[in-house]
Length: 312
Image (tube, rainbow, N blue to C red; front, side, top):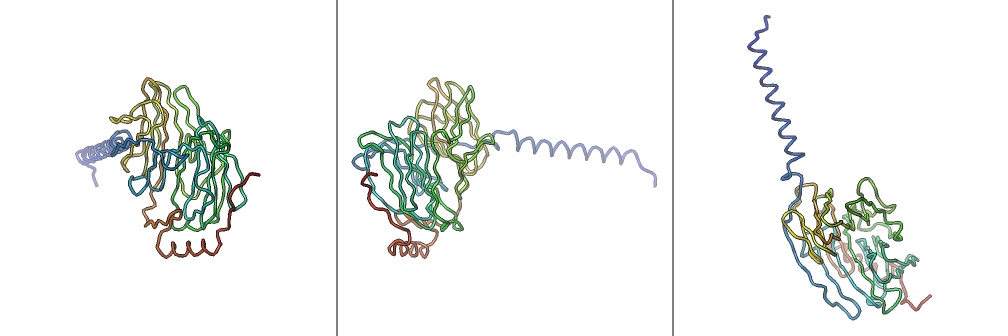
């Protein structure tokens, strides 16, 4: 069969046109800021307020803000014991002591852990099926500054074995450049991760931006930024101390820009579990039936016990 030049030319045109179209679509997907970068969908300013004698702070809760798989994100100042021994189940509870804290925390739990969370250090109580803990300033009267953070467990991980994870300030990895310092409290940044990892995969970074510098961070479906010091912006929205920025689920990156003072903030990101949540005080479950079983285990002593602290 004789091949016609017109057919060859037509086929070539179709092939080239298709290639250009595919290249344009791919280029838009990978380089168009509309697709790559998340947008701020909500900005909230908070005020540090007294909660109990010896405790003040800011409480951000998942039932009011789109932060799940984080459930509680609390910046606190505490100068004395407040809560005493108490249980948790179904979640992981993280305490991150900020490097600027004047003092640190003692952490105790019913699994036998006794740790000092120094300024810049971190402790995770992966409560799972249930355990007790107690946290308080090492030196009463010395104000501590940090974050208490609850991270939700997927239904399949509600009843994992209780586990304590601890990191000194030196064990929290840092990436330092001329533009920024990033403390990797949990997760991964530039292929660097701490030695510990919770059952729920989240990123939590403590970011220090130099004046007038920028940083671009990879983000999972859920992402938020919480300002600590200085000022800056993300897109068209400003960032200041105690400001919360919530982002769209679409997109895979956010960029932060510092003002002339520099910018210090917390960046958090994760994938929502999209499962029912049943709250029961310090317990978090998926179903009411699980909650009933958890409360039964608590009342029968199956979560262990932890006596009040009277010193070593």
